[in-house]
Image 1 (tube, one colour):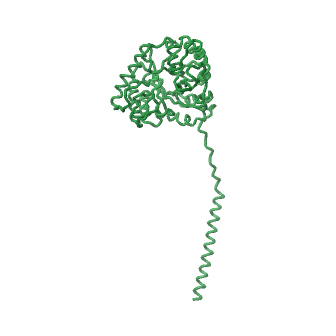
Image 2 (tube, one colour):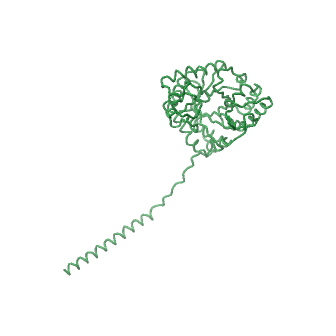
Image 3 (cartoon, rainbow, N blue to C red):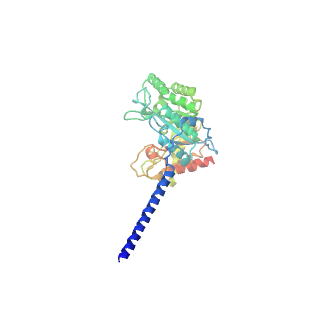
Length: 385
C-alpha cells in the first residue's frame, strides 16, 4: 500500500509539473502574440459632408433631364433654420441623395422662409427658420454635385393668427412701395448667391395673393427688373390655385418672367372620404387639369406646377392643402393620388413640370420611404429613358 501511495504521489507530482509547465507555455505564447500584434486603431469617422471647397472645385456633373419632352421633374425638400441646407444639416446631407434615387427627380425645390410681423407690416426680414446665406450656398452646391437642377422659392410667413402671405394687405400705395423695397432687400442676398452658385430657377415669391391682384404692375415689374439685374437664370412666380379662374394680371406677361407656377392643391371631393383608386384620375382630369389648362390658355403660354402634394391619409383628396387630418394613415391613397396627377400632367402640353411637396419635414405630405415616391419614380424615370 505504501508503494502504491508513493507511486501515486510521484505520479501526481509529475502530473502537476506538466500542468504548470503547460500553463506557463500557454501564458507565454498568448502574451507573446499580444505583444507581437499591432495595436488596433479605430479609424476616425469621415465627416458626413464634403467641404464646400471640394464641391466647388469638383468637375461638373451633368444633370438629368427629360428626353421625351421639356418637363421639370421636381421634388420640394424644405429645410428650416439657420443651418438648413448647410454642412451641418445631417438630414439634407443624408436624404438628398436618397431623394434623387427613390424618386428619380432631376430638380430639387429649395424654399427660403422669410417673415414679417403682421399682415400690414411693410418690413420683411429673416426669422428663426430662415437659412443663412452660407448654408443656402452649400446646399445649392451639394445639389449640383448630385446632378440636380435647383429651383429656389422664397416663402413668407406672417406672425399672428393668420400666417398665410396671401392675406398681406395694404391701404396706400406708399405702404405697398415700402413693402416691395423691403422684400427685395430680404431676397437679394439669396438671389445674388443663387446666381453665383449657378441656380437654374428662382421665384419672385409664393402665393402673395392680395398683392398679385392689387399691387400696381409697376411694383411687380420693378421687382422683376431688380431680380434680373443680379440673377440671369429663369424667373418665375408661384401663384395659389384659388385664383385660377381669374384673368392673370398684366405683370405676369412681363417678358422677364419666364413661367408662372401654380400651387395645385385643388380639392377633388366635397366630403372627407376615401376614393377608389380607379376613380381618381377622372376626378383629377375634371377638376385640376381643366382649371390649369384654362389658366394657361388665358395666360397665353404653358405653366408648371410649383407645388402639389397629397397627405398620407384616407381623405387625401379632400382639402388637399391641409397638412394634418384626423383620418387614418393611408399610403395607398396618397400613392394613387400622385399616380392620377402624373397620369394627367405628363401628356399635358400646357404643363411644363411638377414639384411634389415634399420629401421630408412636410408633416403628412412626406414622401421619403412612401409608396408615393415609387410612383413618382416610375413616371419621372420613364421621361428620362
